[in-house]
Picture 1 (cartoon, rainbow, N blue to C red):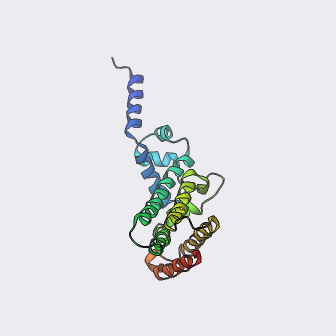
Picture 2: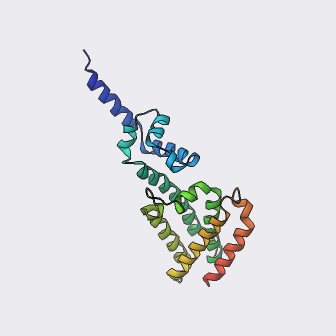
Picture 3: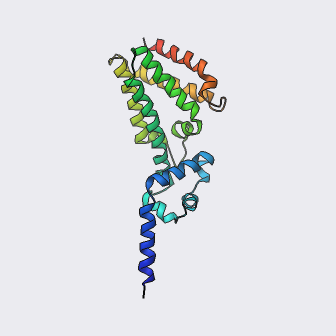
Length: 197
């Protein structure tokens, strides 16, 4: 005779083991990008993954923690852009232009993600207060310092970052993607480059 209680527990444990964080994050990302943050629930994510919502809670304490895991992947993409600019061939001006235009390109090609990363704040979540955001800004600052051989002030770097953010924010929803604002983006990047001197 099979003990049904043991079978149910082991079946649930198997589901939890097969359900990885990456699978949950991928589904959460899909839902966050197609719905408002408040319209996404742990139950809705579990339903799409055909598991219990308890299986989601096994990996993430709450929706905010899951949201931050999704956002962290977006910051990883920005960090990869910074790293490629740092390792690129060319002089400091061309590499700095790559940083500036790369940031704008990411923002305008990933507008929903950008809004989640930099513009969403409510009583549940504040992405800019998270470790991933701080580490990404630190990488932005260190990349520019490295390219310019430690000759930039903290104030200049911060001002440039805010100006890049302002550019992206201004064009969010006004253009479909980076290509529609490319000419203006390059002009803005050149303006900021001159401001660093």
